[in-house]
Structure formats: C-alpha cells, structure tokens
Length: 174
Image (tube, rainbow, N blue to C red; front, side, top):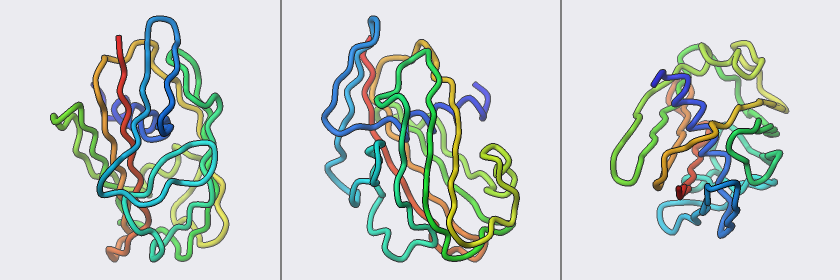
C-alpha cells in the first residue's frame, strides 16, 4: 500500500473515533473505542479525538475538529475541518511521527516532513503563527479490513518543541 494510502487511512482512523458509539453501514459495524490509558482530554468539536497527554504547552492549540458526516461512512467522502492557533511558525524541518497499529501489529511507523506535506491541506511553508483553519476531504475506502486500529500522530517543530499529539482507536467488524 502506498504511503499516501496509509496516511489517508491514518487520517480517517484518527478523525473517526467517537467515544462509545456504534453505527451500522451495510454489512460493516464500527465500534469507537474510548482510550483508557496514556491519553489526555478529548479534542473539542464534532470529532472526538483525544490528545495524547497534556497539551497545555503545545505550539498548537486545537480549538475544534469537526467531521461531516459524523460518524464517517465507508465508501463516502469525509469532510474534516480543524480550527486552532499556532503560537509559533511551523518551518522547514518540522515533522509528524505517525504510527498505525492493527491490534498489536504496527502497520506503519513513519516520520513525515510537515512542510513537504503542507500542500495537501492548501498551506505553504513556513506556516505563520496565528489562527489557522484547515479543511480536507478524504475518500473513505468502501471496504476496510475488520480489526482494531490505533493511530497516533505526534508533531514537533524543527527545534524539537511539541506541536501537538492526537490519538484514536477504532474497531471495524465485517
């Protein structure tokens, strides 16, 4: 699977966790799992992501993340809108470490340069400090292999200051 496909799946998984909800779409049942350890508070908005821990000193303050539809539906387009504030500019050398696990098996452990990928959300590097609104459309695969997926996206500036960290866990049934 190409890195972009895994990144898209990561974005879907990371943005589709909804604590305690179940939904039926065709033959696929999805269970959104509330993390029980090593997580901080829930991300505000209509996308119940979780911060990985204390986010009070992060370079980014995430005000909300909204999904439409919420919950996401396999085979349809997911619209994601994130609103936040950058307290410092994001410059060349900033990275996001993405981990995607299928149960206990690590499917992806990759570091991506934020500046090289800024164009995917219509941004240019450097990304100046201040208010930021990011909109992204993601086509959700119609068929997702059953199992439990956990995603962690942990971002750092070029000088190793913490930007933010988000996590999500979701279980797909066939």
